[in-house]
Length: 317
Image (tube, rainbow, N blue to C red):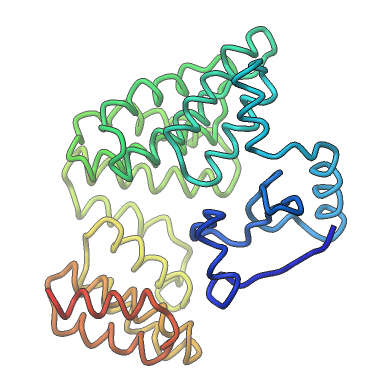
């Protein structure tokens, strides 16, 4: 085995990233054979050298390629292959195919104690977000997670979050109440800090999308933030991002984004803040300011293709 690190924005890495369907989440590790056929892939940092070695050793125990597994599954379907193929398709964001194989793994693994309802929901949700499936498809999948015999608190909260995003995008807010209530109730019982933070956001979203009360939603968010947050760069920048995602309170969000700019290093970090500022200004219909912010983002990170494309899009519009 030879370790070949590649940068997807340069040379050979750029050429291979499309054929290996790398996407936009890094790092991606691909274990391939000498013909370049994928054996296994995984995403994200593995938690240190020893964990990486263990992950590789585990992957090396079976050198069957993905193509070979697919052919083998056609001849003789197995739970192990169904689950592996489902994970592979999920990793390359072919979510509809991932759902197909997760459902097959559920059928083949009956009595094994496995329940992949959340994985099915997550992939359907991603497919709905990409408009590959209609919104109605995600409702039974979300209900299945809420009805799992072994309930997972984080999964229920994540269902509430994802359903909120999807319902807002699809204009289906009437479908949202059940999921937000479930997420709020389960996260309120947790002592975990991340779950408590999620509870606040879900309460604010309930006020915003179901009670139609923008002021109450912003108030919920603010009253639960740490004392002195208005003077903490990271805190008020994240608050600006929170407002941007929901397209509310945009004047104050703009103020905090502008306040962040001189406090981050010139270059790619300041470019990110200029991009956030541009998005806030565009959402608030301040197009001249958005154009200026887009130009500044490009100036601070001229090699970033996304910033250039967004500037060109806004100029053309």
